[in-house]
Length: 299
Image 1 (spheres, rainbow, N blue to C red):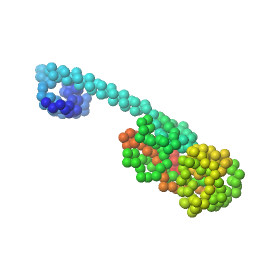
Image 2: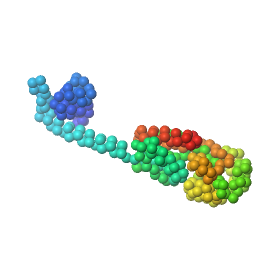
Image 3: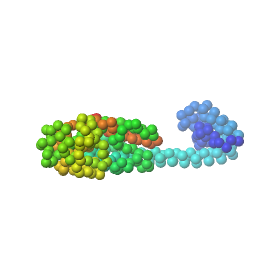
Image 4: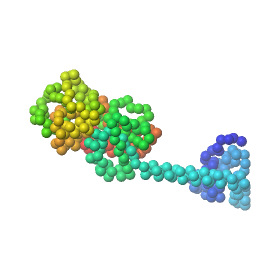
């Protein structure tokens, strides 16, 4: 006799028939025909090499072998149903954990979090901040919202949300604001530009796009993270450079100005979801993010 388990469909047909003591009721519960259940019972008996039922009048009676298998299969299927229910419930109740940079979290996501919770109440979004150390492959993280350039990792389902646009920003509180806001972009060559260690390529990339020699730029105060850089700009400490979504609210409120506009980079704001864990919640979130970026005028 084979040591392999019998076909699962055959075991399901037997378990239902033995539990309900009726082929017809088993067929109804399994949404198949009476003949389909009978064929699966025959397959199972042939696989095991024993009779599981005997005729008793117009009904069926379990043999000793059938009783043993009924008890074992009933217990196994009950356990499977219980565990599957727990897993489904756990998945439904678990929050969707999204990783993103602290600057994106503080400057774009948190001001919109109330609207997201109203629009997607079942998502139960949990945000995890980090700076360059977030990996959606790690346990406990369901997705990553990140500015990055293609090609995309083969093990990720990537939802492209918007092209990255970056530009210089400065505050009306900055001492040279009135002089600079009317000046051409080349005037920034004479400014000690605020910079961030996490995006050292931002200023050179912007300069090239605007016909300025990156080597002609010179830099002033440096900050470890983009969030601190933008706080310094709002405080009037100098000219910073930033992705448009992160300063959109400051521009609308007049805390910052962008006299030279924003330039596209090769990067995309994208939602990365491990293919092994992709589900409908990621699709919902991606659609909401696209709508919100369009609403904010950044997509």
